[in-house]
Image 1 (cartoon, each protein chain N blue to C red):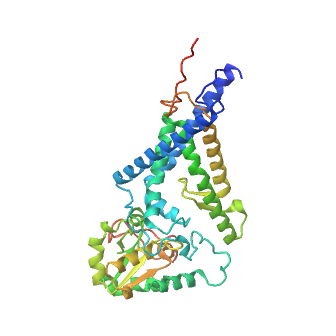
Image 2 (image 1 turned 45 degrees about the vertical axis):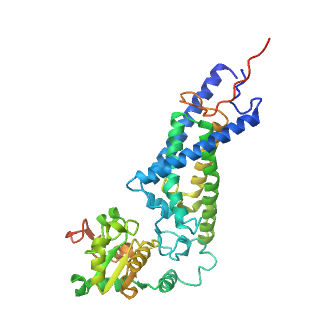
Image 3 (image 1 turned 180 degrees about the horizontal axis):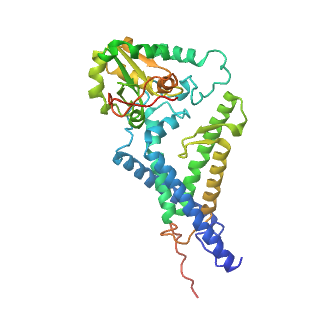
Length: 169
Length: 222
């Protein structure tokens, strides 16, 4: 890979990091400012019968997204944040897919015609578009997970590798 | 290219993966602390110990599909109509269901002007201000402490209380009715208007904007 190509890839990775950070910041804030609406949407997944657990999820998930968004924008603990986001995106995409399949079966309509507010922060959306969006977010997270997007980062890695002992001649 | 030990794919892959998992754990711990603190500080934050859905935590229990859809409605969809299912569920909860005509009749009843019949709007403040049944009291069941002082004395005095929300798959009216019952309003006084504000407007009935008894009305659709 030439220096110019490396440079272009670095710039693209930084833009991807900022984009991912901005998306999570926006999605998180839109839910955090209306937590009751998010609570109602989260309830549709029937995740738990415990109101304490449901309230805790609805109260913390949006702010956690805001936190991750800020870390990505600032470039702090980028790979750890990307992994945390993957750990949220994968199960929630599964839940959204499961609910979409239930709705499709109830309505007897084509899968991509299913439209509902999944509680992701962007309002009512067609399911295929939502899944595509989540897939792209996972791709971007995966890219950052592999160590890209270091430029303009405050502290890319929180945990530095142990220094190797000096070579003895 | 120089080997970077912090990169995935470098010679010490397990160590690098361990560092990433460690970092993710740190992000999770600090993120959770930040999230709980932010929720505590936020004026809109949720009270973690409160039961926001006294009528039942599971959303799938709600049978009606007005604006949205019930989960798992496919197999038994033909057994009961949505209205019948809703009436059955209200009965099971000890609440009585009103249809559009019954709600309109109570609205026109002279006892409504004397607060013997009370309408309760169980939606949030923004929706209430945009338009509500004229004379209805605002009572958001997710922020009950804000409204108890004004709503409870009215409900205690009233003989019939009609609670409504958006209609369709909205169940905030049930939550509000159950909450009122839990603070001592007798069950037989409580009625849930299933059509909600959507059904009310569809029937061309008057809608008041702003505060209660503001005298400002929405112009009816031609």
